[in-house]
Image 1: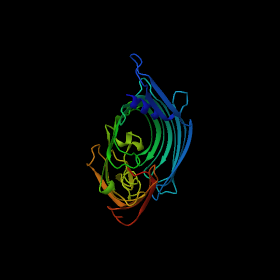
Image 2: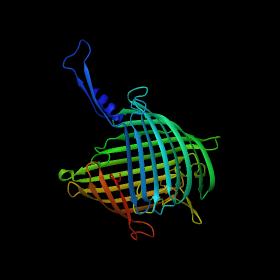
Image 3: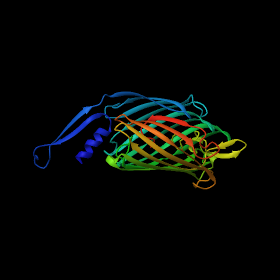
Length: 365
């Protein structure tokens, strides 16, 4: 109980250190406890940069206040620009704000309010969207988290199905188990996440469920566990609604750094004929990496990725596959590796004919 109380205090982000020390001897029926904390600097500013030959340059930044109202409330504003110098449509813009109040109702529950506005100029669609969401984060255990909330989204979409607007309520329910030894550079353990989000359009013209799952497993062996095998599987489905009745960003695409490296960004979609395409209502992806430590700071990686996009709500039916493979280099900075991946398509007419470059921080998954 004391260990978990210390973890809860550190988790708020308001303290860099929190230690609870038991007294030397019980005092009657109570045990004296001494709480020692070191406060974090209340404000923080950060920035990030990422590059790939497909999506181009991504610039991001944030401003964070760790103790906004004096109760360890956290308020964060993020901004991001994606697609600079890239070939993935146009430039995407996103601005978001997030408020989190720890220990609401009970010590293991947090209350949150998130709001965002974004413009997505993607190869297959153009979308402007704004949404607001509020809910609860319940930490059942340190590595088991349940989130549930209620949100509202509105926007406009232009794609191969035409121009349309949407206005819908949604209720996300998300569960996460994270038993990796290190989130940025895992050598062992596993990670599983499942998001089920029922939605209904204002006016009741369309309703359904969006389901997204992500599972990862890591195993190390050899001298000093210098070889790590990493596996990832992703799955997604839109149930109960047609592609024309949901935001384009709800639909699924494959290709690029988050799905199939080597294949062009969002290159796999549902072909409508005549050069027109839209996102699919089902998705499956799998990635496998073999990571080898050359020295304490240098590592090399070999990887194979594959992805499926379908026009039905059940993956593996009425759709297409594609794949990619490549090699990567890792430089361990102590807080996480700097990642350089070189990949090429292994399916389609362009198999082996071009090379894509991906640069980032942390392992790819």
